[in-house]
Length: 205
Image (tube, rainbow, N blue to C red; front, side):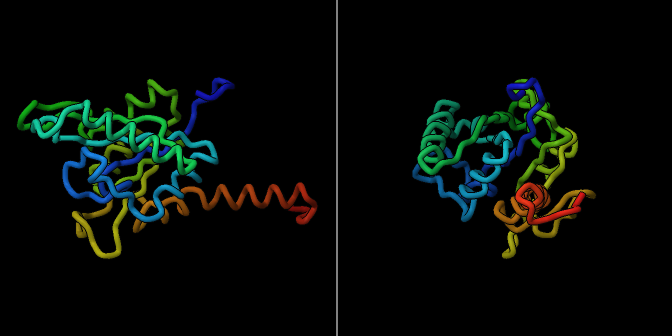
């Protein structure tokens, strides 16, 4: 919640393929490469008051390829890098499971468990929040949680280039374009309000 007890809105973000280049089981800073335009989009989301929450399936944990300490070390490095660039991520949530190894769970996307947990712990308004990811399972989790959703479909194709887009889900080629979809109407409204206050627009509204 914010200082007035109002539930905050959030941008829920998949990690690999959405924020960074997906090279497979990324858990070291040496393997982290920001995708173009991501840091700038994060800065603008934060500037207008969205909480930024990463929700990521990390089956490498179940496979024994790395441990939570390695993920937290990478997370700390990313947070420091973002802070130096004037951006921030508010929270990171991981699913450590893989059904064939650990059995079923309620947090592995497309299940909405990570989003629901974050909303409860952080006081988030899911109806005013968005889920953005590059896999259909990401937006399915968002829809199940009651969020609006954007599916990232790179122009050059991707892992699921031919998979059907769930009804009601917007599509963008990358996070910077998703930012325009999400913030465009709000920024236009704010610009109009400023112009009205300055006297440049009269009789509007």
